[in-house]
Amino acid sequence: MLEQLLTGFDAALTFGNLAFIAAGVALGIVIGVIPGLGSVTALAVLVPVTFYMQPLAAIAFLVGVNKGGTSGGAVPAILLNAPGTPEAAATALDGHPLARKGQAEKAMKFALFSSVTGDTFSDIVLILVAAPFAVVALQFGPLEFTAVLLFAFALLSGLAGSSPLKGLTAIFLGVFLSTIGLDPIDSTTRMTFGQVQLFDGLPLAAIAIGALALASVTEQLFGLWREGETATDRAAARGDRAANRLPFRTFFGYRKTLLRSAFLGSVVGMLPGLGVSLAAFLSYGAARRASSDPDSFGRGNPEGIVATEAANSAVVGANLVPTIALGIPGNIAAALLIGAFMIHGVVPGPFMMTMHGELIYALFASMLIANVVHLAIGTVGIRLWAHVARVPRGVILPLVIVLCIAGVYLPTQSMFDIGVMLAFAGVGLVMRRTGFSVVCLVIGFLLGGMFETSLRQALLLYKSNMTAVLQSPIALIFLALTLFILVRAFRRG
Image 1 (cartoon, helix red, strand yellow):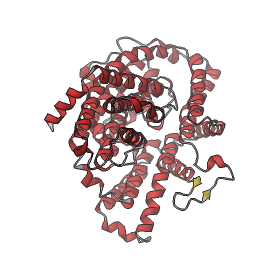
Image 2: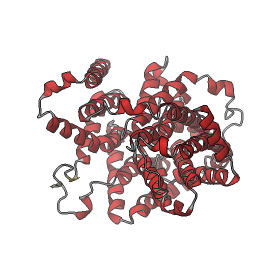
Image 3: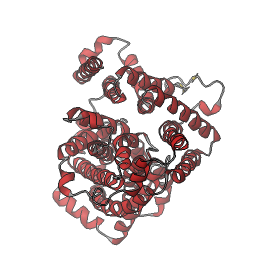
Image 4: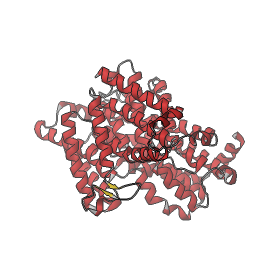
């Protein structure tokens, strides 16, 4: 393996390949900053563009876009509390409060360094376990996935604040909303009310941007209208150069959180379909539970940023594990990369390492190189984004609203999506005022389709015989953990 990887580095360390990697990372960061135009949208647009490129350069370029786009979403979440994607909402929980203390640059450094660390960890995991993973992944069926998702819902409900009941309510409201559209089993319409636009369900981007970003921006604008620019705003804009330094010793002090979050993100990434958002919030919850001062989370604790960014970036490399081992995409981004592989005559699956070993190991080398490039470009970019923190909020927030509208409209060019975004901005404002978690709503919607499909498949497969759970040790373990977490949460509440 080591010899093949060294050969891969020899193929990857060419000027052309390095240029495409750098271009991909830079483009991904810029696109990630714009609400709604995340790495998935960028990959969907750019995959056809790579048709005339060399296979290695094409895949390395797209992987660079994915890496940069994942970390780029942290910038607006930290600076403006306007996460354009669900996973960035986890970073905003502590990133924006830290920025409000005048340490926006420090918060972005924590995010970048954690992102690169988690990404590198998952790339190493990919190199080591791509082949052995196939054996484990084949043990997960509909019943096991249903148990895993129930476990995830229980963990996420704990992030809703003092009331796990409100968290569960928001999650299952999101699951309910995800059932709008065509039935995944028999394709009958459900709650579409004769609207053709609802046949594919409510648009995720519109819901996420409306409830998370636009609702937050609107609330901040109302605050400015009532109170004007406060002393806290002026302090955040000025910042302090000394306070924004991040020595390596300080960052390395969070090594336990880094490793735990990178590991958790890698595990989530290796299980097809669970996605980046789940990894970010599970890791945030794990970091808060392990902390000696859990009450400091949500108030500008850097450990919250470290946990979320290390975990969501760890998914980027790990989601290629099932892609290469089984030909099954780990998430939407991996599915688009499968399309890119096939454009260049490479069929993902168990024989991929045998038939295209040189290309795959060159890709592994390119991914490791991309992390170094990401660190360099991101460090330079922080100085640019830090200037945004010095612009008065009364100027920048209206521009963010324009970007939110553009981010929702451009991928589909649908005014219906704009209407959904505005409606969920109102829903988000109401939920914020009443203590319900907007994040839980969005995550419930994001995972709802997968939960319904796996649950119904399990019921059909086992003919609604609930004792089938006893035949699956994996499902039993996750269901037991779910009950433990819920009982503990309600006792505390």
